[in-house]
Length: 97
Image 1 (cartoon, rainbow, N blue to C red):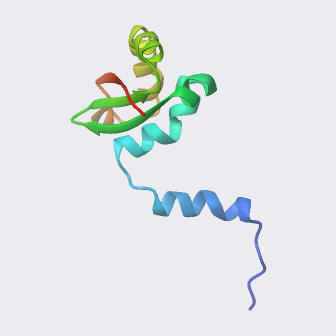
Image 2 (image 1 turned 90 degrees about the horizontal axis):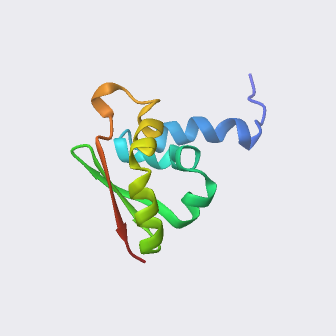
């Protein structure tokens, strides 16, 4: 019995599931663009998580301030697909390269 070649698009999602670490940060990073929006994702990225506190690095103080005002909405969007024990409880925004 021979195996037929499969399209790469079929194999990648399964490979990603196997290789991606099952952490809160990995889940947040995976869903960041959807939760925050493409424009925000171009300027800000989740870089760490510890004890439910997510740190998001922004490329300017303006973006950090804007997202600070939107943090409750972002929390709701980020936590929607997560189990209760894997929620982000707070987001901190920092400015950095």
